[in-house]
Image (tube, rainbow, N blue to C red):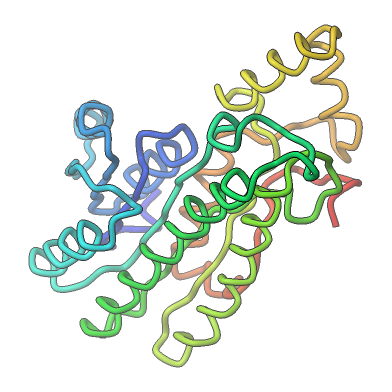
Length: 267
């Protein structure tokens, strides 16, 4: 498992469950890895775990919504290594940041814009700063963005995060077109609902309580459109990210790669 040997990788928002899974796979596949988050203790703990199993991992505190911090950190990565091969941003938003799931007629402009500013805005910042350094160092690197299947779903009361997800997919294609001539590939990763994550289990439990149904019924609704009996896992997401960031992943440049085992209700 050395698909990423001699690669220099950075994972932003690595305190999250999805980004943490991606970081684990990058490390297992041999990348020299830098993991960042606003929560320094969380990424230090992850770095300690990965280094104990043979990884080469450094942790740092970086706010993925602060362009100055992003730029300073990636400048250091380039200074230390002379290149930047892979960047993944796993930033997410909680429903609380959007005021729950208000109907579009009741949501405030601030609630609608919150996930667009945080999720899409952060992807814009980390991607463009990374591209600058890849261009300067003449690195034919990979920029991986995280989006959600809401972009191609029809669900009520999630206008802001749905718009943000669709915007990230569009941004992926634009950046791939801009930087492809310099050998930089840009790919979006779109996981399905990951039942093992706190975000999904928390939403299921909250919704079940709100609507007076049991959690098993909520889970059944999520799984009703599964093509296979298998559901995606955090490990699947991490391994797909490692593959896409490898030299073999070039075939998926500009694409949005679904990690959902197949869903009949996703376009």
